[in-house]
Image 1: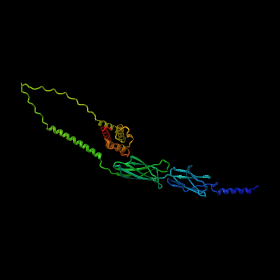
Image 2: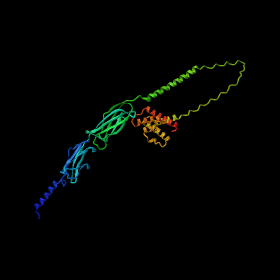
Image 3: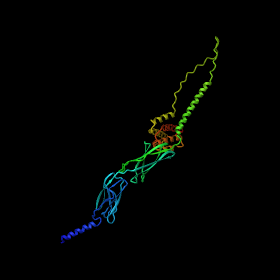
Image 4: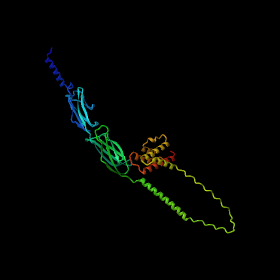
Length: 377
């Protein structure tokens, strides 16, 4: 029968074996190379006593990755802080033989938003090419929604690429414009909102043809009206009154046929309104107060009327450029193209509507429907 000393020796031998052999009950440890980190920074997990199985890296109880230990049970893992909110988080490691925990404090980071803008052209229209990048702690921030605001009122959105870069091409009227970029985060990333510096750019433009044509038309109408008035005045000035016949002598009989009875006055018929005036009245009613909604209403009304004349054409599903291309070279095609281009510039590119835009879409509405009706379309 073994003595007490023999039993004690066996127990001590077992404890030494458990402490020496990896994965056989040795306590796993974890250490972080930093206790505080911001977005885009790397935190290294390291320790030993992991045994031979994979080490699960845990952040707030969820697996964030795995590390393979060495033959001695040591391991290391680099964790990138990304979508981890601000605050203190419980991190740790877990193996088949146990687990260990530590804490990591995530702090807010101020990103840097840079913006540039240069004038260019897009399909013959003046435009601004806006480019920039979004970084934090020297690393590009991908997948962020950047909002560009033109002239402090017209917004447009774009998404950053893998390196934090972004680009947006906006059609805009000639002149000097301002652009600023803004970004904010609601996806769990510990990043504060950021705003770029205001960029000013001048977009060159050609001669303003529409206003010039309107002035020329007014001058021509005034000239024609003045010429007709002068011509009628000169005609009346040259006309001489017919000589009066001498009165008949006293007692003489006036012979000849009796005077013909005067024809009763003919009542003038009421003027019949032309189809063009009805179309113009409809277009003006659709335009309303002349804002962006009015231009869209005229465009939608034109598409609806054209779709009624072209069943099966599915015109309502076309973009403005596709609609213009569909009618190119056909009766009314130029008018359809003018309305589509004006609507695209106001609704898509965000150009503020002007009185010239309202007149363009109204006249284009009338011309397009009149010309297609004449052609039997």
